[in-house]
Every structure is written in C-alpha cells, then in structure tokens.
Image (tube, rainbow, N blue to C red; front, side, top):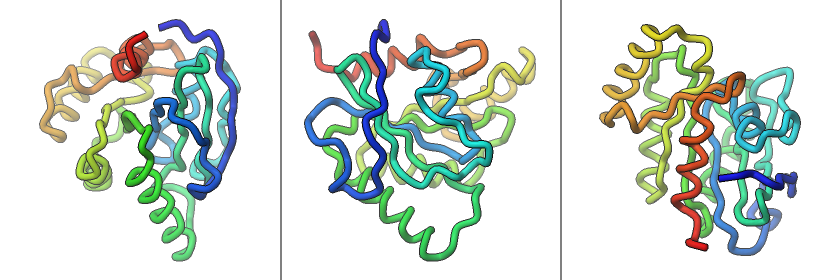
Length: 195
C-alpha cells in the first residue's frame, strides 16, 4: 500500500467529537511509552504528523488522522505511565469503553508493546478486553532495533507463549529503521473494502 496523503483530522474525548462518516478506522493502543506516535509517523512516512510528547502519558484525547482519504487512524491515550487522579482514570476508562464498545467503523486495534519489556497482566487484560468486545487485535512489538537477533528471537518466543499465538502473529516493528512497516500496512489493507 502506498501512502499518498496523511492529515491530522481532530482530537476529541467524547463520541460527539469523533469524526463522522463511515471510513474504516484503525486504533493504536498500548503503554504510554510503547512508541505509538513514532510508529504512526513511520507508517505514513511523516516525521511529525503525530506529535510525540517529551513526557510519556501526556496524551489525554483520541487523535484522529485521515489517510489517503480512504481510512482513519486513531491514536488512543496510553496507559500505565502518567499519574492520573481517580477522576481522570475513570474518565479514561469511560472514553476507552465508549470508543471500543461503540465505534462501528473500527476494524482493528493495533496493540503496541515495547519488545524489551516482558508482557504482563495489563497487556493480557487489554488484549482480552478488546477481544471480548469483538475487536480484531493486531499484536505489535515495538522498538525492535533495540534488540540483537538472539534477543529478538527470545522476545518473539516470549510474546508468542504469553498470548498463545504463533510467532508470526506478533509483528516486530521499529520506527527508526521501518522494520515491520509492510506487515503493518498489510494488516490495514486486508481490512479495507475491495476497490
């Protein structure tokens, strides 16, 4: 798939502010420091389409981007880093439930994990949450350039065993050297309406 056009659409927390229409949509979710913004920038070959914060976890809204006038990408707030009050946590949970539970055009959730960090209960719970809502989940291990070949092979086995999926179901990616870009775009392309 060739990315010819990528533009920021809007930021919003509530369903009333989310983009209208029926373009297929793909969400990116994970820990606050998993590299969501960098990965989206790498996918669309734009260095600063998605702003990367100096402090992980500062994104509090859903950020929407229109790609090729054919589909949307949604950058969801990350979890597990920035301190949030009880009220902020409740608002985050409600926003996520509203989005994942009701967004009709959502085709898949790309769940990002730093490949250097062993997956744990929050990752399992997040994948189970989206799966129980009937959402396709694409597992993405980011920052693959930080591992040598043997460490990457070990990480691949660990992710595969943890989630109970074949190793090829976990896409290793790197925003730095574009590892995994074609595989990620293919996951989007197979979920788009046939031309």
